[in-house]
Image (cartoon, rainbow, N blue to C red; front, side):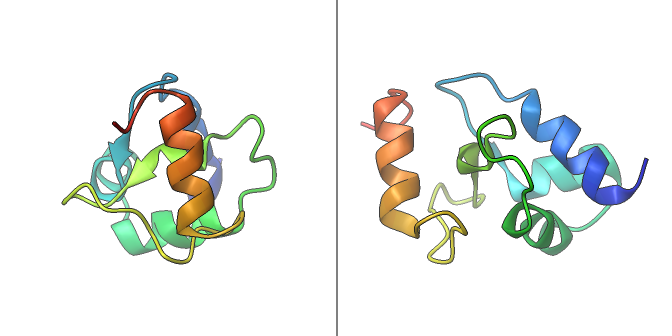
Length: 84
């Protein structure tokens, strides 16, 4: 299994209504947060790999969310009751 596949497996574990940081995912798979970001930007299956649940360590969202930008990521998290 390559690094991106490991990242996708870890992101699939994030339950609805929860988030994890790029750093958390990176530590779990043995890479860097930047590589996690690269992988999520290339997410081949956003319906089943919930990359919108991955956020920065300060709780902020990425302006370059690959599937519609920060506003779309924020909307998805609000719909899941992740953000207030």
